[in-house]
Length: 92
Image 1 (cartoon, rainbow, N blue to C red):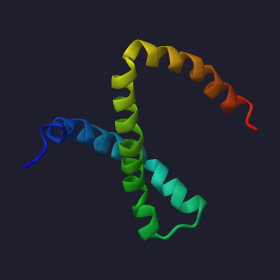
Image 2: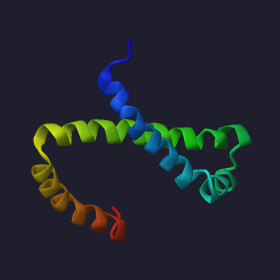
Image 3: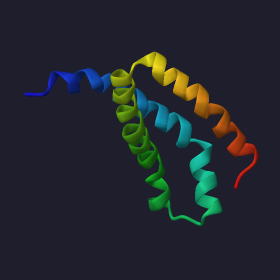
């Protein structure tokens, strides 16, 4: 029998699956393949890697947010967001 919480998570997982394919499969995969001289086989794994990345990052962070509370998490995000933006303009 499938766990009830897992069945609730399936639409979310499917949403990240679709987002991953929409973001990466298009133009980015062909650019990455040409820039890094990848074979067709290796370049074909890029969309799967993005889906796994979404899965591994989004689900645990959502579970942590539910434990700590949305307001506390939002305040933490406002603290780290300027740092992340600054890092993109001034890399180490």
